Image 1 (spheres, rainbow, N blue to C red):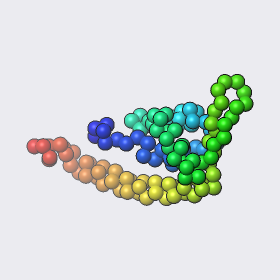
Image 2 (image 1 turned 30 degrees about the vertical axis):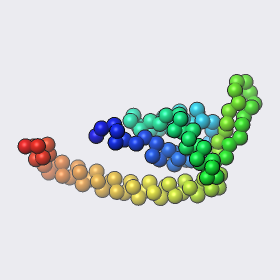
Image 3 (image 1 turned 45 degrees about the vertical axis):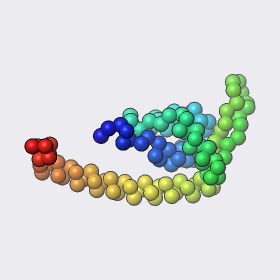
Image 4 (image 1 turned 90 degrees about the vertical axis):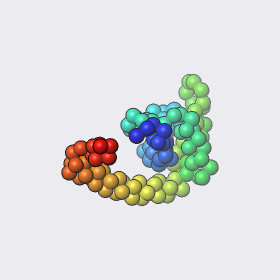
Length: 125
């Protein structure tokens, strides 16, 4: 599959909410945590994360405060809200349904591939 069909970040809000439920965080560290759990090819860039965080904040799913303590620049710390927990529950239900569909797809694909060892010849031969 070509890379132009891969849409990294489609579930970025879901991953952000889940990790913020685990621990409030600032954007750069959250970015590292998200990319730490995603496989190659699904990594997200920091700009997309900050856009997603702004959208989540507009929806009331996260709130942020400036952390000016300590040395260095001030950082915006994001935390999940009650609305964010509701949104996360919706994401969980959606992902569960998609996972069932993907599990069926992979099982069906594997069964066909095993029964027809030369799939390429079937379509190109």
